[in-house]
Image (cartoon, rainbow, N blue to C red):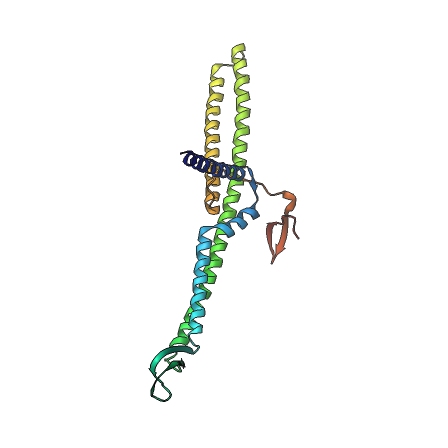
Length: 261
């Protein structure tokens, strides 16, 4: 009974430790600020669609190798051995005698298709084209995910600025409401002015709530691209000093150097 209780207590402590580690990992994911490069690198390594596409490429490559190996000749090697003890037939003299007779047989055979209407060659060519097509689809998938992550990342930065602006504007309006209340109490302005400012305050509170919801949804979208369970990840705004403007073919292109040349 004591052993059973000890085992149950050990399993409970182990489950609590795993749960605590999971909560710590979730907390770290929510408090760590992700850069754009970190988001893209993480997605290219952990995105389920990319992993699935990579496995499909491995299957296509193995299929191509198998079709190439089909051009090689097939070789079959077999052997057998028998031992007779006592009165047995001697295979060399075909006479019965009381002795131990050992008999060994080995065979080697091979085959090769010389011509099958170019079936195997066409199969190799088809598998090679399928692999090339798969590689292009894989690169397109990575590019699409990269662009989607960049768009979601910039959307978060945009919504963060909108939320900050809405919050600052609401703070100013709150101050105006307080000042107007004092003026109304002093009899210097009419109540209608206070009601107008309070209506503006309510409208700006709604704008702040909408901005916060949009910010949450943009973070959720980026988390889905990264296959993260935590939807409250934080992103870091790029340093403006690291943003360089380069002229490429007559057009202006902006990129983030991240401190690298």
